[in-house]
Amino acid sequence: MKFMIPSLIAMLPVAPSRNQGPRAPQACPAAIPKTTRVFDNCSAVVHIHTMPKELDMLAMENCVCLNLRSAARVVTQFFDAEIRRHGIRPTQRTILMALGGQESWTMAALSDWLGMDRTTLLRNLQPLQRDGMVETVGGGRGERVELSISAKGREKMRESERAWRSAQSAAVKTLGEPRWSTILSDLKTAALALKR
Image (cartoon, rainbow, N blue to C red; front, side, top):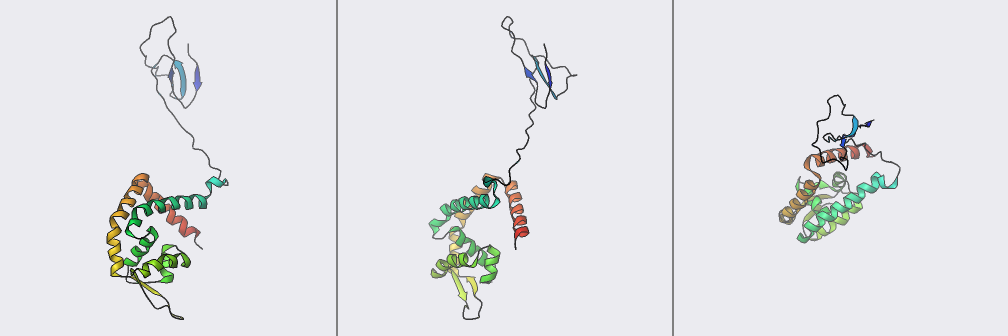
């Protein structure tokens, strides 16, 4: 006996009656469309189609700011666990990486490029300056501050390179390189579009 129900899910077999021994699976008739559920003793073929859940964009748990800040905090803690044994924090190493990329930066340009407000940048620069890893020129009344990495700062970069690479590789592996590449592109697009 067959009950045919239109569906996008599959063909399922029915167990044999108690008075019968097990029967070998039979091929399902070719005339039965795959979009039909058939309860019979034919071979099972499963077609599963899931519908994506629609997010409530006004719900707190879907807040863009909340989720990005939360993810950034976890990622920072992960990198911090690898890098801080070398005497610097991930944010400070990022500053050294930026300073190592060109001869000098103004405070305003570095703040803008890193996406840090001036107060946060100064707070992270102070220990780097104190320990001789960053050099400053200017800063008098009406003068702009020029920042550059010192030889000691470059040595700290080399010292912490392996730890940074380890954290970077683990994070990218978790996400998958193609997925991270897409996320990175999307984050840059969003940042440019929302920047005021």
